[in-house]
Length: 422
Image (cartoon, rainbow, N blue to C red):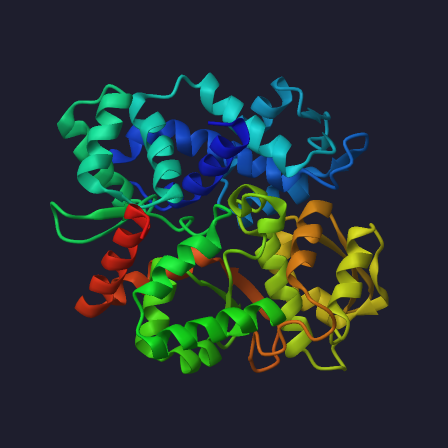
């Protein structure tokens, strides 16, 4: 497995493990450890100009880590590890000098840190199996046999490891015990979306097939759709099933009074290769969501976005946006500040400008935005400031427990068709 692929899995899986403290957590501690350091490095990195060095104050680093679930002990250890690896310099006042780094540099550094910890067979097996089921779903029995043989695990340990991966949401399973099929959120993000979507289309009734195709065409033209409109077009049952199996991504933007979702396609970033490796922790999706909100719901008096493509291009070029200050910039992009994707500056009381800290994130978001009319139906909220963003993995995990028997049968059958190649 390439370093960047392994690094992407470590970043994604460490986030899932953040919320898990069960007895089995120690089995995957090196994944959690290295992935968290990789996430810290991603927070620190700036524009992908490898010849440039950026200095970040100790307070900014502390605030960013607190907002991203990286506690003080992990921050201190992580900074030391990154310093020893030659990725950063730490000044006496605690500020950090970062040599410009790309997403690929973060992924490769994370994989190297993982290997330095001498990972266990369990940990190697989880990453291997995650990649395997992202390529196509796998029968649970076959998966257990595979990781037992490949990583020299006892049969009982292989079984309990798959159970652990389900509890921590690293891998999902559909079907009754003995005939379960394993899959994950990246099944449709491997560059083969059209082929896999075709297998799902084949099992639909003609009317359902037409509705699914209509939504796909709208997404191609608009980039994102308000999820209530997609549910209306598909019908509630088909909507839940297609989101649950992963053929559509549901994302969510929240403000102080409500949370509203929109739908995009896992195929959106495929012009860059494997979308998972290009945006492993959803920074570009968060940027897209925030800009969509600013375009569709922010009032003119606050600073409404009217030309999203031009705005992102300006950010990607390294220019500051906001002229002499815009109120919405200080209110709607707090999630992006927390992720260290943008930096805002208060130019006068309550009025802010912003600049992009991660050029490659902006370039990815630009692949979704299509002209000045992109995603007009994407987010319908009440006009108050946007606060948080929820990525497709978290949204799908919330939907899955609501699946009824018919939903689960559909998902199992769809996965089985993908597994067997139609």
